[in-house]
Amino acid sequence: MSDCRSPSISASVNLTVSKTLKRCSWALGSELEQHYHDTEWGVALHDDRKFFEFITLEGAQAGLSWVTVLKKRENYRKLFDDFDVEKIARYNKRKIESLLKNPGIIRNRLKVESTISNARAFIEIQDEFGSFDNYIWQFTDGTPIVNRWKSMRDVPASTEISDMMSKELKKRGFRFVGSTICYAFMQATGMVNDHTVDCFRYNQC
Image 1: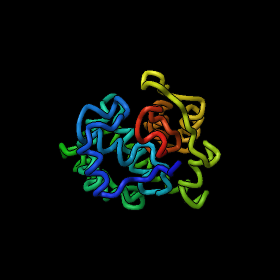
Image 2: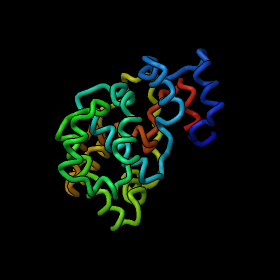
Image 3: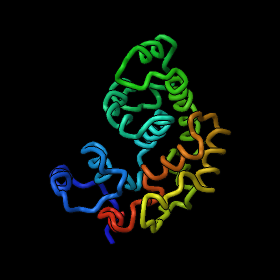
């Protein structure tokens, strides 16, 4: 079984072109969702900047669809300094007001402000554990959880582990990290493999 890595650019193009590959049902709505599914979802992540990106995007999704967030993802990267936590932690009120005027992101004050406070909490974890990567993977003992779902209908919205993660992150000052958001974060970052068993990415992950 190969490890779950993001395909090369040429490979991802071939995956997009192919209409015969079996994919998780949630990824069939658009080419954007399909590409994300084929190249990122479920890939075991060990990059702190990417971890913070997903914490931000999953929090921004609250109450919305994931494709809505994906469409704004590049704008988030541009407007939030490519998710540099050191820079985001220093954002002031003027920066917040500027962000809230930009239609390129989800203009929810609580979500924008939480990104800044989350950056500060994120840095504290890095200082304590050496990296966020060292901290977050403790919840799965450093190993991805591999499930065997036959249908996306079988996939839970949260688990005991995501409940624990949510509780611990909130203690550390994070916001928009409810259990459902934490489980989506785990799926996105490959802490759990929730590709259905008939999906071509399942065995790769």
